[in-house]
Amino acid sequence: MKLALPWRAWSALLLLGPGCVAEEPAVAEPPAYAWQLPPGLPTPKVPADNPMSEAKVALGRRLFYDKRLSGNQKQACASCHQQARGFADELAVGVGSTGQKHVRGSMALANVGYAAALTWANPTVVSLEKQALVPLFGEAPVELGLAGQEQNLLQRLSADAAYPKLFASAFGSPTPTVQRLVQALASFERTLVAGNSPWHRYLRGEATAVDDAVKRGSKLFFSERLECFHCHSSSLFSDSVDWVGKLAPEMAFHNTGLYNLGGSGAYPAGNQGVYDVTGKASDVGRFKAPSLINIAVTAPYFHDGSAATLDAVIDHYAAGGRKQAEGPLAGDGTAHPNKSPFVRGFTLSPAERSDLLAFLNALTDQAFLTDPRFGDPFAGP
Ligand code: HEC
Ligand code: HEC
Image 1 (cartoon, rainbow, N blue to C red):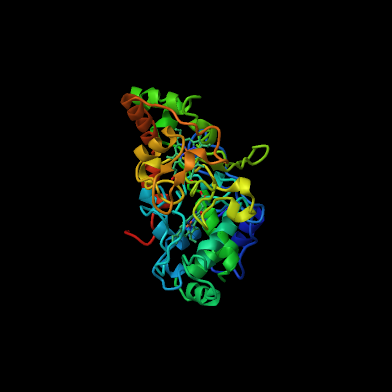
Image 2 (image 1 turned 90 degrees about the vertical axis):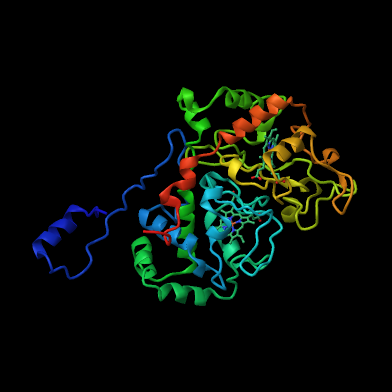
């Protein structure tokens, strides 16, 4: 990589001649970060105290894949957020480094830099820097299991052959700190932008990127009959979004009628959506509408992985929610008092269902799933 040095620094180098540079030249203004965004996608917002840089992204990528970022060194972020699965995993709920189960499933990270609220149902987690602390140090549940082990972790990174140099180029100091670590992770996450699915390419004018089934399916998705687009809105397919130039962040949480235990209006304990944060009855069962980009590769679905396939998801919306006849989760979700008026049910012919599935499948950005910029830096050459 070329260094962009101010003229005075270059002239100092020239005057001193090679081999005579006593100290590092003055650091130039960092060049504006060159986002490699798919055409038509907005620029993600970046906190003022954590500007983007190539060096931070490179460091963040390494940290994201490094199993030394867990207490027992068995897990990395990437264990639960796998590129080939849209940076989600195949499990119904996350399983941490010590085997402890999360109550919710791992989430896809494509376009997470545009998310106005992070995780399934927490309006207070709004920055990627802050979110990263949860899997690292959280104890309920244990994910990476580093609570109380901050010093061990930082020493482990200091003793490594590569990290001090990477921290130095990212932060001007070779010393790892927890803040620098989450800043680098967040910088890497902000580069995870997907927007080259057949559907996106079709929207950009590539007429042959999708077939007629996909086009018919899109009409259903964007119809007042199915209502999907109200919550999975814009080309990001979520209504909790923000970006550079947007007047205000949008943040919304919806009850889609998944549960209604014994008709009491309750969701399973400890997993009641925004209610677990606010304690307000009107927030029971409210969750974020996740983006549907790459949805074909992130099964199982919903916050608790309770729908195994996209067919099962469509069954859920067609029925206007979920009725469970027996067992501990029995209850009529379709009658939940908080249920969104947009989840009221519909009937699809088999041909229409297959068109809707074709549309959902056309949201997969295959290049994103294999883009070497996002891959495991420890693997291969
Ligand atoms: C044990 C599996 C596991 C590990 C390890 C893990 N995550 Fe997650 N991740 C999850 C789960 C589960 C959720 C949903 C959490 C919730 O709703 O409370 C999640 C949610 C997220 C989200 C929110 C995405 C969105 O769309 O709102 C981000 C960002 C994220 N994780 C980043 C990370 C980073 C960075 C690391 C490493 C420091 C990491 N995760 C490690 C399981 C994991
Ligand atoms: C009222 C807002 C709303 C409407 C309308 C809506 N969704 Fe959703 N969608 C959500 C929310 C909220 C979730 C997460 C629910 C949960 O996990 O509890 C979700 C989850 C999903 C998921 C699973 C995502 C994942 O990562 O697990 C898919 C697929 C999906 N919706 C597709 C659709 C389709 C197709 C339609 C139209 C038939 C639709 N949605 C209509 C809000 C909505």
